[in-house]
View 1 (cartoon, rainbow, N blue to C red):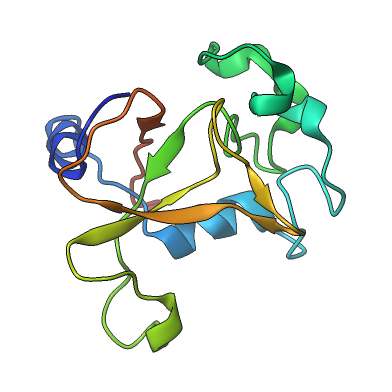
View 2: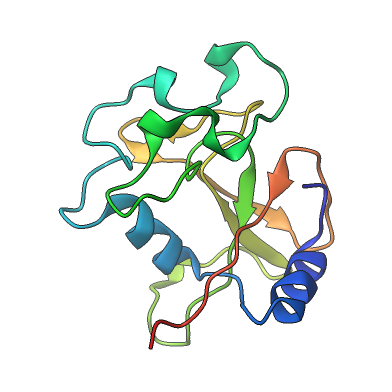
Length: 143
């Protein structure tokens, strides 16, 4: 947490991994049936650390096991926003691109809404920003 996009990229590279694209991140949260949230189609605030939990701080990754995705990914929603990369050119429509100098962060946080209506929250953040409610996860290619 409290890392810029470059900080997150540097750590991922150091560990032999990378940041997921926001499309990969969303796929991990919504597969295999294009569900609205990692656990299903209904918003259930008790499945993640969000403002309704009233904790006001991040929790351990395994604090909300009932919020895991089908593939077992924990904390895709809530706890901290997560930096993502942009997919390759040609994979996005103009409406899916943030303003220059910004990248998408996904999933909400302990301090911010994790859902916007029936969708997973995402927002654009200036790439140099650092917040205590902004973190990342690493991805790697499956061989």
